[in-house]
Image (cartoon, rainbow, N blue to C red):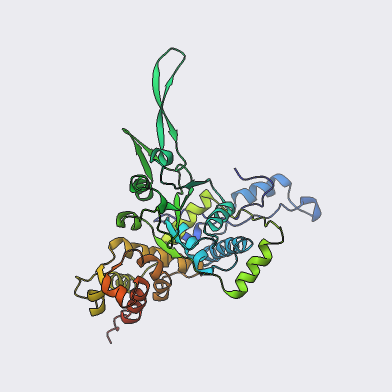
Length: 393
């Protein structure tokens, strides 16, 4: 339940159905009832109320729905901006993942506000939030939960399941690469199937559910790199860079004067689910889908469409899940900009965070100073956008 002292959350977008377009999915606000005694000859109050109740609500078109959605996400950015200085692209990608049911892996050196960004994001959403500090001695049951043996009043012993911190809406897996693979694997089923299997029972996680993990790419002492199967579960691999000189001055000014910024809640859990349905209804044309497929297939050295430098520098490329995340992320970018359909430029905006952890470069690439980001950037320049077929005269 929302705190009564917090601001009223924005209107919730209802779920569109296959027979009803999203244009009818938002109920307009109703104004107050007019005073029947203020005008001569006005009908009784009972008649006016009955007529108002029977009058059909004016449906909103898709443009109004998208405009309202864009306003909500801009308000979320404004609230995050009260605490987080800069990091515009990172915030955009985090919001895109939330609106598409995706998970994020944040990489950056210590002190770049990775944990603060996630905790602040949870504060502006009216959802449950749990943080797990991953350590070398952390066990899978410390995340998923465990069976506890209890004895009732009659002396009968029963097992009761005690939920772990994974049963939440937003899970912050802090420094995920500091725990062994046995514990890292506890997240695999939860991230993909949104459920946890304990013994013979399967427990469904709350909806929505997001895993946002952080890790330090510099320090490798006492760490366990994430396996490729788990990396592929993350929709985005977001690399956080140092702030600019102006942003760093703003950070020092804001954090050294002792003021604490207060953020307001913007969306509820139900509103997030409705936003996810709205984003999934954004149109992705055949040309955009073909372009995403060409881009993903070009990352595979064994594919005939792969350029020569990919065959020489890449050991293995991205799988089909990368194409799915490209389309889903591009839909979120289009919706946040108030557009009805996906453009190739939306694919370009999220290509790096979607593909960088799904491509493995070899020793020759390292010798030439080519990392995965450089390979993806070159592919974006070389892979041509498909042109629409010309209409016959």
